[in-house]
Length: 236
Length: 236
Image (tube, rainbow over all chains, first blue to last red; front, side):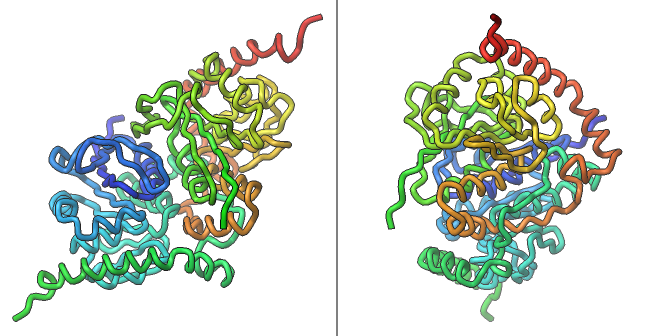
């Protein structure tokens, strides 16, 4: 049985959270007909936030037309929020995509590129409120779809997200086969994976540990919102 | 607050299933004091079964003493089952490890190295029966611990597995903080992630697709069992 080729691109950048990329990659790689493209400014190795070194497949310049673009998140996302070559690339490649997608704080990058203005989207729980600054409509769910935008929440949500994307592209039968191949029968050892289920003391501790970092992200999101505002809301 | 350094090594090899490695890496990388080592025969880039290219950090020769060794699985595991340099390295490095661990079919490699003889262990559902051939005791659970051996089942189980390992190394508080940071609140789109929950037709289809491959793995496991037998059961 032949399968239609599906060109699925994922942005690779220094300081990304690698599971935002590698969770969906495991799902997408099992889609019959999938052609995966890992896209970066150059072909040099990229180091993730906790040290994993990954090689890109292609560059902004050489990337073919895609069916799906996916932007992962992670601390390095902050640098992308006003990185013109990256935002220009995302806008250009997204133009012909069937689905424009993100995992974790990758949605903030899509938002900075002006691609979520007026769209519902999700993000890592620590930063979801920031989506509203450039123009998205934050919705605190694990996977959020609005027209042809699909976003996943924090880090591990990328697996749930990618199974939804595969279901959209190829149907439930294909997504279910991948689900079983990947033995996706999660049994978390604790019930503390979201701010709603975590004990208040744990939530406060994790929030406190990352407060400085989240504020730095907020400043970048505010700058991105200011860059966008003349475009989104032209002055008379 | 200073944290004791924890040297956590993971084997990297061509044709591994990258999520077996990258799921646990995301958890281990968040352990305060963690020193991660990605170990391969050489420092050349390694290509995973679905094309992701990853750079090793160190070699069999240069790898420091480890607190934890983890062997991921994937199709490339078949080649390791009678690869003497790899099995020798694993036996040597495991000697001083506090925990000897695996994800997915990585347990078959530990088994081929003689390190699971008489130990309970788990594996990807498609191949768990093969664990008995070299000498392990298969137990079909998501995460299995027997003395200082900890194994995870197929692919996505690596996240549950690694949270258990972190709890063992650093306690529940640390593991819970990582759990929340990673927004590990899984919401699988289907209930078909194990052979017990999947519909019989789906299970039959996935089994049929991989039958030739699983048989090739079985032949490698049988060869490994034969190599071990003079050691494990010396003739009088």
